[in-house]
Amino acid sequence: MNVEFIEALDQIEKEKGISKETLIEAIEAALKSAYKKNFGSAQNVKIKIDGDTGEVKVFAQKKVVEEVNNDLLEISLEEAKQINKKYQVGDVIEIEVTPKRFGRIAAQTAKQVVVQRIREAERNIIYNEFAGRETDIVTGLVQRIVNNHVFIDLGKTEAILAPSEQMPNEDCKQGERIKTYILEVKKTTKGPQILVSRTHPGLVKRLFELEVPEIHEGIVEIKAIAREAGSRTKIAVYSRDENVDPVGACVGPKGARVQAVVNELKGEKIDVIKWSKNPEEFIANTLSPAKVLRVYAGKEQKVAKVIVEDYQLSLAIGKEGQNARLAAKLTGWKIDIKSKSQIDDEVLKNDADDAITDDAIDVLEETDKIL
Image 1: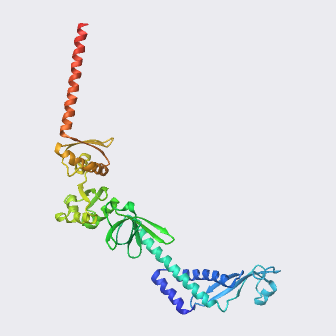
Image 2: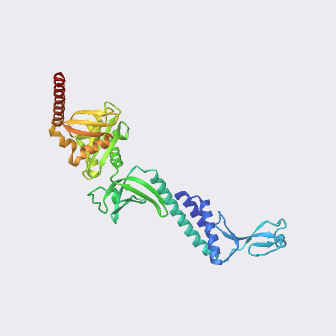
Image 3: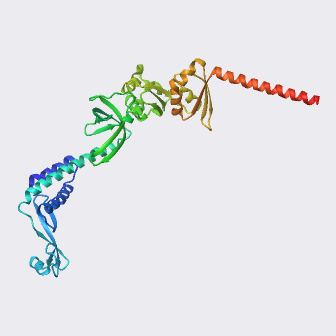
């Protein structure tokens, strides 16, 4: 090794952020192992690298003793005094034992260590970059698909989209650019492992943040999201500025903003709903596109009875109950939807029951008189 090598370490320190001292310490440790492996030494050795010239020296460390039992590890006091009269029993002496052929071995070992440390540093940089971006959205290219796992190229590294996190009926194609939501960043021996999702409700939230400036600026707030990935999503929004319509801001001019999100989600339907602190009003809004006549909310048990026109009942419930199910997820309330005619029938039945009860009382009274 030489001055050029030390200059290379200085350049690595600037570009990769790895200190030269750290690299030199790692190289010294590796050279110690290389020395013992190549020269079969059982000595206690120490490697020293000159930080200015790059010169490498090997020193055998020996303990000063009265009587030598192992000349590889010990040196007599008499011999030590010949080297330096100041040495006493118990001191450790360093004697240079640098082999003539060690230079080539040192250069090869140093190169391997530096390459390894650079890789480790780059992995740490990537890990630290993405570990701070969990719950964020990233854009990448579909690189390959192995056993239904989609590997996405993010530039410096790749992300994994597991089958459970893929949208139903979505067919990812190699080279396609897609947006995903970062679920977790794991640190592994092979570098950071980034797990992403296309089904998480957070993806919808991040997409709206990208498309709607009012959300990014904090004027409009996303209060809740209920999603059945690939099919339908309901998103409740609220405006901190009474002059800004939260639904209109999210929908955008001619529906451009919400359509951009729909396109990214491959046609998934999205209902943008105005959030309200009034439970009755909020529940009525969540059943959109159905029109609600009345909501009776039992606040203690969070159970709501909703009344709609007969022709609106199927719309309110939705296909396979999806609309009502998403509304319940969005609000956190149990929702019981009834048509107006069903309520009328219940009222009539209750009236009839009351009338039967009254007749029974009258009969009992008449019977009592006769007796």
